[in-house]
Length: 265
Image (tube, rainbow, N blue to C red):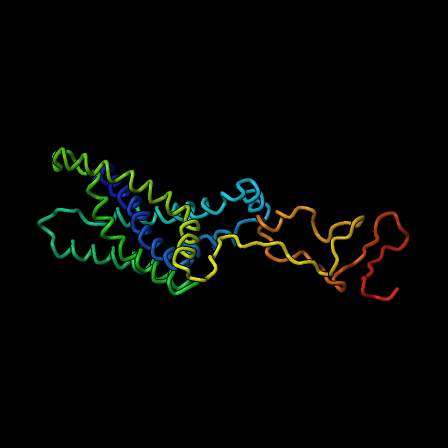
């Protein structure tokens, strides 16, 4: 197996990922449930520095949600490429048993990854969708492996049909997956499911701590920018309790001191 074969197998595994995810996304969207790859988004987002996350979210605004889905798919694609490299040749009459064993191993690895995603899914429908994507990976890999076969092994008409269906289908699939929340919301409205659509970044502005706020002439409670809570990684209101406030007096003073606000003066 030369580098050209390795590259061809890797590309086949990469393109098989969005094709395998597409039916699982349709299943989740039909029930208005979160997509099966949201646990990956949550892991990446949890370990992203707050400053960088806020810059990205405020820079892209509403486009941050579809970009997060595309990014999660992009993280899975190299894994699919590695499975594609390890897959046996499509036609090898000499090694039937070893071929079958390698395909079983490929399928088991893909299903195992789907089970891992499903165990971290928010709902049972999302878990089933993750396992479904793992099951569909091997059939999709078998199909994508035929896209880059040599000209001598594919008739001209079949090659044209494969080119017309393959790459555009993957592109349409990625675009559809990135707009998952739109289709999920549409399914909830059309089928009257009654459940609330799960959003990837569900940040909303907190309520006022006291009635009557804001008061004219006074500083805002927390921040004058409402979008701070809409597109921000800070999921809780930055409220400091009185016992946590301290006053530190240092510098050009005779007696540096540290005073707690809760202490009597």
